[in-house]
Structure formats: structure tokens, C-alpha cells
Length: 95
Image (cartoon, rainbow, N blue to C red; front, side, top):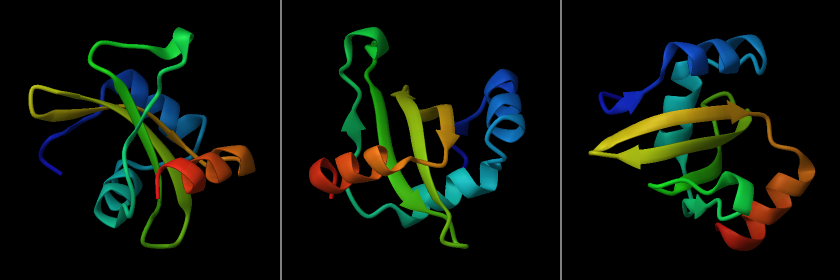
């Protein structure tokens, strides 16, 4: 994806802490089947809004992808394996 921006620090975090690759994140955007949900929790509010979704990679690994959309670009904040609460919340509100 040409418009996916991943900073060096975010790349290190998703790779080292969550074992997620940039290609897996791209696949989640390609395979997304639902809405982007805004994270409106007080401690997580940003301008522009932080958005998130859950989608599978091409190998059926579910990832929660968190990002900001700014100036036509997607700025990745993090991506990781969602827990059951994340999945249930997205199933209720994002699909």
C-alpha cells in the first residue's frame, strides 16, 4: 500500500512485541469486511481520530489494526492479535 506510513518505532514495536509484519497489516486492510471504529476513550483521543478494525490476514490470522488517517495517508499506530473482548466488541459494533 503506497499510502501506509509506518514509523521506525512502530515497525519495531509491531515486529518485536507482536510478531506482525507490514505485509500482514496490508492484508488486513485488503481483507477488511466491516467498519472502522473510532477509539473515543478519554486517554486515547487524538486529532485526527484514532481508528481501528479487526480483519484476517491471507493466512487467517486475525489482527486488530489501529491507525490515524491524515492527509490521505494511513499512519499505523499498532497491530496485534486481538483478545476475545476485542473480537466481541468489533463483532457487535463494527460488522
